[in-house]
Amino acid sequence: MFIIARSFLLVGLLFSISGNAVAQKNWKEIISVEDLCESYPETMKNMFDDFNLNYQGLERVKTAFNSGNIVDACHYLL
Image (cartoon, rainbow, N blue to C red):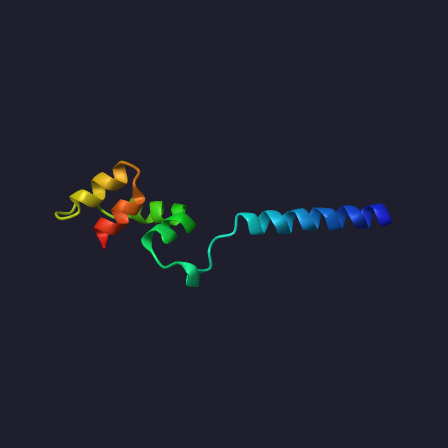
């Protein structure tokens, strides 16, 4: 019984450590475009995928995004 309980505790500890290791920043800690892109890269990519970057005036945004530079694309969008 002790071995089973110890195993469950070990697994729980590993999950809690791994969850904290890959945790995103608290939204209150995000103060720059760089922080946002670092904390939520997939969300930012999805956002640009949803935008129509073919509109006039978004040429620099489109070029930066297509080059894989989401941070610059965000700066140009702002």
